[in-house]
Amino acid sequence: MVDLLGPYRGFGALLPERPCFHPDTISQIQLAHVLEDIMQKFYSCSCYFTDNIFLEDYRLHVRFISEEQFRKDYHNVLRSLGCTSEAQFTTVLQRIQAEVERRQSLEIRSAERKAAIKETYKPLHEHVYCLQESYLSPEFLQIVKYCHTEGASKDGLLGLITSEAAPRVYRFPVFTKDFSREFMEELEHFEQSEAPKGRPNTMNNYGILLNELGFDEGLITPLRERYLGPLSALLFPDCGGQWLDSHKAFVVKYAMHEDLELSYHYDNAEVTLNVSLGKDFTEGNLYFGDMKEVPLSETECVEVEHRVGEAVLHRGQQMHGALRISSGQRWNLIVWMRASRQRNPVCPMCGRTPRLQPSQGYGDGFTAEAGDSAGWTCALY
Image (cartoon, rainbow, N blue to C red; front, side, top):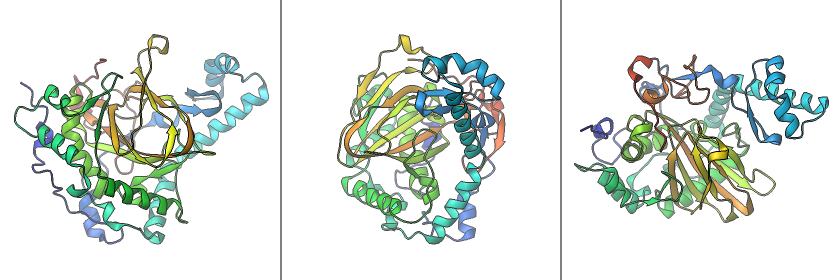
């Protein structure tokens, strides 16, 4: 019998084992020790600069190598979507070029923002940067405790969480109301500050990159390693759930006159956590289809309701989107969890052997040990 929890058993008790430092108080020596196992270990795939460029006006993801290639591949489909004049096509090319340039300078700009935030931003609630077990709901702690028991199984776990109508989409509480409130207050305090802010991803325009604000080391990493990892190992062993070793975490914001919805897409992740943080909003449900390889014409989408304080956990490569909100604000914590053993053989974003590029921090979750990854594939269920 395969021990799905093997990679996580070393973490022992649920309480965080690693020291927790706030970015304002951590020394350079301490920072070096905390990041020693991260820096120069993870990589990105160079397809980030050419693939999955989102044209918001046409709800279309494209690949851009050259103008000649782009015209050949997308001229007809863009015409069918309303891009009928040369002037409109030129505008599309200009927006693609701007997005490519943004991606090429992303790591430099992110490092600059992170340094500026550390220098100028004063947190409202410093304690929320370091995960404590008291921040987690009792129901969630019981779920994780079960995952650590001898003989824990997927069937047993499914008796403790909610299975949504969408295939392999699960719901459970994560944080307490008090922590969620203080976390939201911290995020809004940062949003209203003069500190620089970057886009959370290529499709959302409003939100916060949590690594730039200093949440990665003390909050998100222990949450992934000690709590979300054991759940994912039982729920998604076929998709690398037992080998999650990196992540990208951010908060997205939907509000009137800002982002209202999110088009159909898949994530750059093996497993995705989506926690509804608040505030008051109407409509804006998630909807899920099948895995990305299944044509849309063969897919039946299922809605999944957002419930403040609860998380939705799903396969990153499962197609999904967010319907339009009709009032209020909706904030969501998103954690894209990645497994290098899963993605090293084939990049999930371009479908090719990863062309590794040196990257800061966790990069896109690739490592140089691709030879250890043979035989890991994500089955479609």
